[in-house]
Length: 381
Image (cartoon, rainbow, N blue to C red; front, side):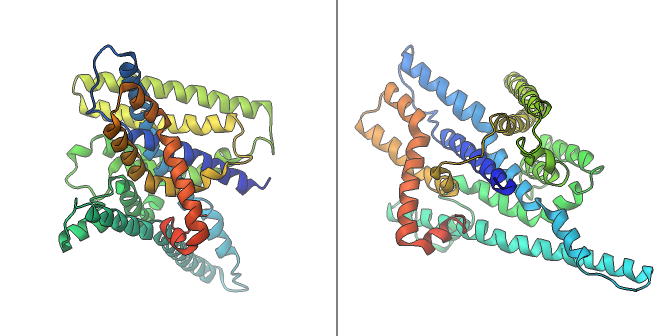
């Protein structure tokens, strides 16, 4: 199997698992209360806490890490390759050096322009289109008014599409990628830069303004730093240079990071009980980072990526549609007379329901309106 295909399949599986967690997050219903002492009520509350609150907190940070990694993946080879392709012949060394510096600046500029154009199609256009769709749905349902102010807030500020707050943050981070590059592209400068970003995320309440969520910037920068300095470790296929030592290393990585994930989660919950904001935020961010590393390590231990189910091809479409589906299911269940057992069952099965609906709808659109489907998913196939 080709190396890039194996890595791409792993990313697809990773994204699929994060999408499942996002659905469980949004399926939580904290306002619904059933009689105390009911075993199904207690199980329902426990399932929401374990899947939606505890495990779910790594979901969106994981998407930021993946996005940062994929944006800068292979950047060094692309830039260096472009520089090495233009020989300077017999020019004096001083002229060669000046030309090399100029070509490097030019090549970097072209790299970012090319990436921004690509992300405009895969992020910006779907963001605007889906926000418009949600606005029209709410408008048709009589839950939104027809005005320029509401239309602007709906299309550009995701007023009726709350799950796309993540996509807005990702668009802003994409615009800030030159700054990310400056911070993490140097191997020696990357660790102190990431520590600084961690501190900014922990003490976000002391900052005078917020261009982007500071913790989102940190996760994105971690992905970028991994693309620059840890690509071989992240992507190397154990089958290619497999040794017992390599497999044990990934197993050890999984066990260590999962242990730290649990410890920091417990620590964060305890500091939160005492109202200690900054220690709680620090523990939460650390918990998410180690949780994401442990999930990737687990995929490596299981040697996942040889193949992927067809449903994983619809990750973005599922993310974009799941909120409508789960709200429709919850309203239907409430109308039919919901119970603790039904709530528990629906909660556990909600990812399967949302994925099934998105796959069926996506396949229908692919067959009968391929251009529309491509627009909705930003060209992802």
